Length: 168
Image 1 (cartoon, rainbow, N blue to C red):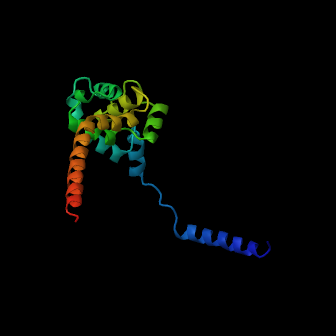
Image 2 (cartoon, rainbow, N blue to C red):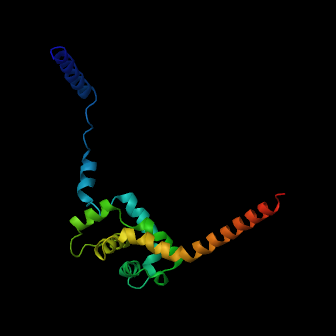
Image 3 (cartoon, rainbow, N blue to C red):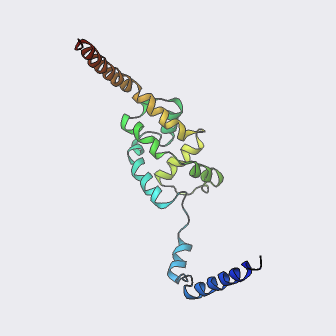
């Protein structure tokens, strides 16, 4: 234990020297003003930008964003265009976003952009909405997937039969 004490002291001294050599930068007045002026959004800025782009086609729907939540809740693939159904899983709120939005919803009367309204609807309209969106996509693609599987099975069966017929 005695041998370790000088090493701990040396580490503490080294850390103090490094802290003196590389001090943390002090925020400028402009940065402080910008931080105060910009209220935090519901989600991170890059994610909000991506969501805004992804949600744009949905904004034209009557009852946006609640119409989307209703279609997902009912597994109604006819209520949305196929390309919209395929895009939904990527737009759903993550678990962390859902928890954050549920814990601290926006103030009453706050102006939300379309992407934020979409996220709030997905969090508040039905539980496990993020898990249901991929299921909606499965329902949409199921018939096509079965038809494709049958084609592949028929092709494999024909190849198998041709292989068996070629043996002596």
